Length: 114
Length: 114
Image (cartoon, rainbow over all chains, first blue to last red; front, side, top):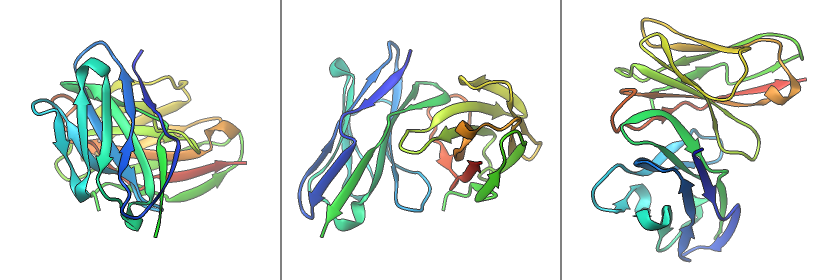
């Protein structure tokens, strides 16, 4: 069965620190990969996605993620976080070519201290 | 704003009652998916509708049912509510059920069962 594992449940950083959130998935086929963010009181927003091509994907707000197929990983990174990045971050995977359903990780709560 | 709207935003129901949640998809999107997000968890796929027909279902009992209308808006119905049904219910619309498309989420309906 498909599953997504996010390594960090709660992360606390100071502004300007670098961020890396781990995401591993379990699935035998070709996948689409996503990172979503949920700011307090707001809807889920897409940060970035990987469908095919360059495994280094750049998203909004300075975020990027690298797909490493051999490691079944899709880690999210940002070189320098801001207070406004405080949010819940979710990694999700779907079957490539058939987005019938997204399988989600449990989420990582990020708090950035000013 | 994603163009996906859900109503109501909050509601409280008593165990055993029935509830209907509504979702208006983004313009041009013919596919709607529903997710349940319990507190501290990632979203769980309930089912997907494509052009008024169910197109995949997660591990939810039959008392969770849905509809999609000709204008692609959708309803989620839950019968015989249980306390564990308390959660945030998310609706997501996408351009297609296949292919590499992303899902756009509404703000969700917070259901509390007492």
